[in-house]
Each structure stands twice: as structure tokens, then as C-alpha cells.
Length: 343
Image (tube, rainbow, N blue to C red):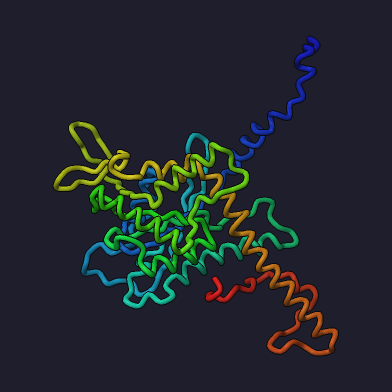
């Protein structure tokens, strides 16, 4: 065998770590969990099907005006495994049909917040096992598409309340549903009103500024902030326009092509979700939202144990608390939850 050249002897090879990581990543795949929040009939399912160019979710909204409005918020997760050029994603879409449809919408956001926190709690429980899995199945919500009604002309009091609470637990991306029901001028005014109201109420939606951002990141995030809320149109229908098939919606005055950037922000939203910020969505969920939840829960556990130890040292038990044996101190059931009013 020929002796290696001086150049190959000087080459160390640690720069191949990215290739090693890529091979492992391709084998393992990744999880992406998106929750859809909005009124019935806002095209939530159609939009997510359009984004992934697949029929993933059946519509759960009202199909006719005569259909009875659901009286409770139903949480419906649907999981599909998608493969694109050897990259495998386990996609879970969590639908919340009929959100905010009721006459009395008091605390209608509770089931959504509870679902998101439950996924954090489940992940924490798996983390705290004495012998945990090498790869923990990640069901934490990475993004929330919040659908604004184009007929409201801005944020309703309900939108303000829900957005404040959602932004504390997940990455919220506001979209104007069925924006083809508005003129270009109306859409511009709607966006301006929403931006002003979010600024006034200090509602911080994704993406967030980071100290790690370089100039390119800041410019990209600034361009995205200019588009928020995304004015979107979704469609699974293929329409023939002068011999060219396009995915869009047919109106009496013409056809909306969802891929035409002059018609809607659909392409910008898809690129933002999947082509530029997908990894960051997952990372921010882990390092920001889940970490806040984890810190809060572990602090509560520590306080409970300290109270139990103090009660045991005093020779009694805590009022309203049953002492646990030492082996049961590592939680195996549901972790203590914060009261919903503190969310």
C-alpha cells in the first residue's frame, strides 16, 4: 500500500462531524408537532395540507351553515410519517375545531393550553426516569398556527387574551385565514391593525430575537416580521388556467393561485416554517418554552419535598399532603401543574 501523502497525514478529519451527524439524523428522522387554533370554517386543515402538499388532515369544521356548532374544543392529533429525499419527519398535526365559536367563550383556551403543557409534562416524566430511553419521543408542540378571522378587521378581545397565553407556552405564528375574501387594501390595513394591537398588548410572536443571530439572521427575521400576520390561502384543488394546472381557489372574478406571491403569503409561510426556521422552531421549543416549564415543575417538586422533610422532622405530616416513601419521591405519574389562572 502506498504511503499517504504529507497532505493526508496533516489532515485530521474532525470537519467530517457534520457528515456524521447528517447520517445519524437521516437514520433517526425527527418529530414536528404543529397545533392549529382558530374558528370553524377558517380552512385550518386545508392550509396545513397545502403546506405539506399531502392530504394529512380531514376537515373537522362545519361544512354547512346548518351544522350544529361544537360546544367544546376537541383536541384531535393526527400523525403521519413523511419522507422527502431521504429525510423522514414524523409530523403530528393537532386540530382544535370550533375554537371560539361558542356564545360564551370564557376560558375556551384552557383545553389548548392544557394539551401543550401535558406534552411538556410527558416529556419531563420520560426525562426523569431512572433508565430513560436513549431517544425520547418528542410530542412537544413546536409551532402554533393561530388563525385570525378576516371579517374581524383586527384582534378581538378573545384573540388578545388567547395570544397572550399561547405565546407563553409555544411558538405562535398568526395567519389571516382565507385572505382572498379581502381586497389588497383591506389586507394591508388588517395587517397594520394587528401589528399595532400586538405591540400595544406586548404580544411577542415567533420568531424571537437571539444573541446568537448574525446580520443575515436579523435581516431574515425582520423580513418575516414585516409579513406577520401571514395573509394566506390554502387549496387542495388543481385548476386549469389557460392550459396550466395551478393549485388554487376559483372565484367569479378569477382564480387565486396559492403559489403566486402577489395573491397571498402562502409561499412565504411555507418557506418560513419548513425551509428557513424548522430547526429553530424545534430548538426554541426545547430551550425556551420547555425549559421554563421544566424549571417551574422541578422547583415545585423541590418545595414539596422540603415541606415533607420539615414535616417529617417535626414528627407530623403536612396538612393536606400524604407522606411518600423515599422510593416514590421521583415522580412517575402526572407532575404537579400550575393553576390555569397563572398560565
